[in-house]
Length: 525
Image (tube, rainbow, N blue to C red; front, side):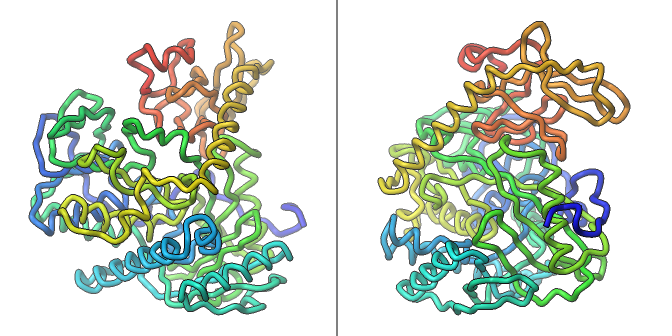
């Protein structure tokens, strides 16, 4: 059935995450001086904050640098499931990396869940934490076979799972796999308590402070956009995309995907548990309490950033799905999130490159950031403290498994080349004077490709559409009112400001060329 076949509820006009809207976080100053600490952490999401908490508890002087506000990125726009069931992953890991590494991946994420649970108990955090069974289900014969193989992988790895042939929704499924005693929570309420603990133990936090480069030496230095310096024994890049790549070539080893979430009040009672479809397009479900009422988060519709259909249609598809299985009285929130996937689907956590022992990164969580991000913090803190950690080799960024990595490397970079060329050839006949309020489009100005958006007050904003990362051409995202890069996932506001990296500098108002990425101070490359 299509979108028009079901009764409609009104989608919110703008995107707002329930997590961020329902929480009051302390504000922190901008860095306006040079400082020295034991460890500087760039990125104020779940990994950066948890790592800072762990290191501060061990007596280290730590500083967090956040380009925007704390928890305003991927962590603040998650579905907040805490689980080791990362849709279908274990059969693939066994085939590509071997059974011992696949088992370690399960153990790392299970330990992360247990750490969150223990921390909530120790600090008595009220964050709506609850244990939930995690379900992954199939509606087609193709994915029925894949879930069967995943169940067999569970058996090989000693993971207790249950294969069933129904789920508690009006969905005709072929089979489903249950992993019991997983969890969900309110991530901002949880991390807000950790933030208070960090500052209580002397940790420094700086917001609106963009790290742009690193000088590597015995005691490395982070440079901010305003040219202030932070020297430290260790630099930890816990940003969504590493703000500093070194010689790691991370742009060529990951791709960015966006997915969408609506928070809705269902007409039918939610049965409990968290659910995700193995089939595409992905459908994700979990409950959430909003203003004393049980509501449901409906997520999915994943696609490569800057590629695909009008983004509003993704929200409409989620609404359609919700109406079909639960009936929806209203939709209170809608938001989207972006995450990165590595060549072998396992995050990169550890030394940025071999030989750079004091510059560490954590990235590529593949939409499972609550568990992977916490596992990253546990690993990074051990590395800084000089402790052995049995997951270090599993997550090491320098690892290479030929079976998935070679194929995916060529596929991803062929996709980048395709969009790089396609964007350069695309021109438009749209006259910017014909744009209505709240409408954006690609236009041509004197034969040059530009992006135009007319805001709600009728003001026209024009930017050059060349991404300041490596020079691909951005596309208009109507539901978020952003310019999105189809190559590496950078996103910009309609005025050109950076919303999401790896780009560091805004879209330019003037004619911008690919060569500028190598020669101009405004390139961010």
